[in-house]
Length: 212
Image (cartoon, rainbow, N blue to C red):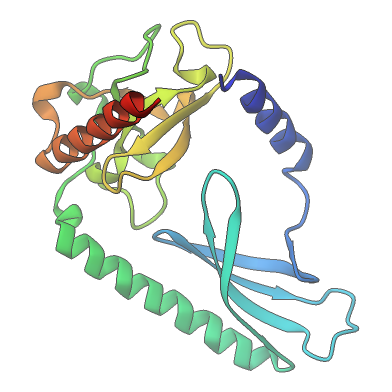
């Protein structure tokens, strides 16, 4: 059911990957990913606005990007200080979240820990992605784990890369690419939090199936 949409998404990405990101007339100059947020500095490249500088925070999912905490100013230095403060605050939040969940103390899976995914159908399996594809601050084992639910890239003889899935640390629906997958996680190596999330996701799927 996802084939046509995924092909369109891949084609759209290839055609638009070099375009500049513009937010309400402000063109993004730099951004930093910290945890689940992207802190942005942007400016008016037309040099016609009274308030030419802007900082904001972006939250992204499969469907859209949501921008919050936007501030505009006529002073570059003010925006730079706010931009830096936003990065620091996001780093503190990420540190606290990882300490609370114990994520900082779980090293990522290595290839030798996993079952090879070569020529295998990933649907219904827990895949671990290579930690090199994780954002800084997320390069630990809990953030590697995804329950694959569909997509062209999940097929045995896949001709695409998109794998639709749930991130097992948060349960959030997302997408990974087949080339990011390091391997399949054996059941006996799943951490307790992943087992709990898996059970919840499967119960939800069963419940929705019964509602149809």
